[in-house]
Length: 290
Image 1 (spheres, helix red, strand yellow):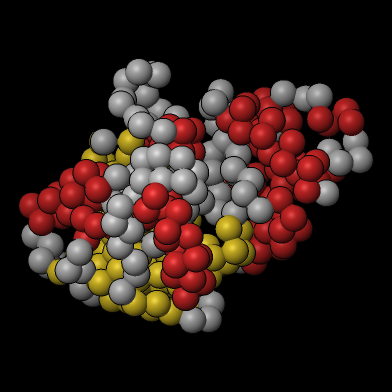
Image 2 (cartoon, one colour):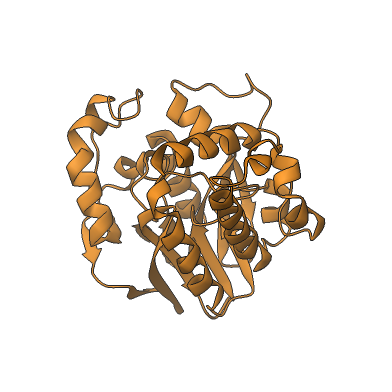
């Protein structure tokens, strides 16, 4: 895990996108959904207060984040979950004794799957046992927290997963986007909801922010200050084009690099070869669903 000091208040905890064999993994959900694509949890810190956004792919990841924040003076830590997927909640146990905040929908999704998650049968091993549940939930599309003097907004969106929460810090001009956007492309998990995701991306584009920090993206881009709003547009364009593949066989024959060439040419996203597999899975999942 690489620790990225992104500004005086924002820290990134990045793992993955290393040569195969460069990290030890136990299962496909850790490797294929997280480390092979690169994954970054984030923390906001102001004085003695800190907010962790997603707890990592293991308890060890969570402990490392908590220890790093402690070494930087954080005495009060709150964790926020961007959504229920395993690679975002696996480190919850490292934050026992802290408030763990999630939307009511995220808590509902975790509770419904908790037995399988703890048994390691939902997406295969390793099991997340115990699965530490959120201690605090919020309803509706908006909630706020304070981290020292920083006001933090928790905003609900139906993108990637219908329980998605993105975190906006107005004073810093940043959006911590979870899995709502990715570089190179989004990982389809709810294919029948793609039209809703497109509409919600339009709504997210209307927020005021300067830079986006996604959970899955290029470490170089994250380290250099994050992504612009073009990442949202690129994700929207990809999903729109993906829907067109159901009636246009020509589009289904394109490689990913060809499929997203307009967005690559504009510099909104970069090309990362492992997403070729993700693209093929997205095509198959959408065709089966529709």
